[in-house]
Length: 303
Image (cartoon, rainbow, N blue to C red; front, side, top):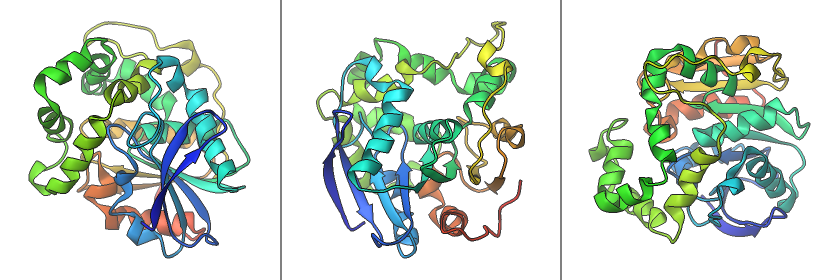
């Protein structure tokens, strides 16, 4: 990565933004998820920066960016506004967007709304909202795997993390997904330093608290929300979904039915990767993302 800048946005927040690649290359904004920062892309950026202009913010509430404490500050409209305000601040007109985890939720939302500034959409292990909400009601395994969301929404969760300490929280956050021994000590230190910033944990958790996604308790019968059953806007831009098939939080059911929601869809399945595919399998992810974002065919993609 070539450097970082703090960029004040018209939305009223200042984001820390990592930048890499040639400023004259096709621009791509990469949006990380929970509980990370721009460092989600640490292994991927060197593989993409020769052909792309990479713009990698710490999203609001994360890393070295501003951390509003109000739940309302993390509603989808506010998070989407940051995306486009960042493009404005960098004088970027049209761009591709890549999203992982919560970053994918914002990337999906931007494409669903049909903003003409979005040229291409790439998703890494982040569910389409319709598919996700439907699966939370109808798929027992996905519902069970998503109960952590209810825990994160509990107003006492910060106290629980304080009691266990950030070292234990780190192990619980990543231990079920990756071999902890494979994460370098300096990366663990980066995470814990970010989480230790004043108000950081509440800000990160507010992404879950602001979400309208319904997560029923196991065994409870609930109807599918009306917004899932009705007509939903199709995504018109070329879309690539890259999925680590060993993801234990977001199961492969999230790939079912995407073709009915997206006009131009390709899917790349990574059998050996899990939820944190951007740094678990960066070469494989880059092999899919690079050609797609540069406007070339992705050789491994299949719908």
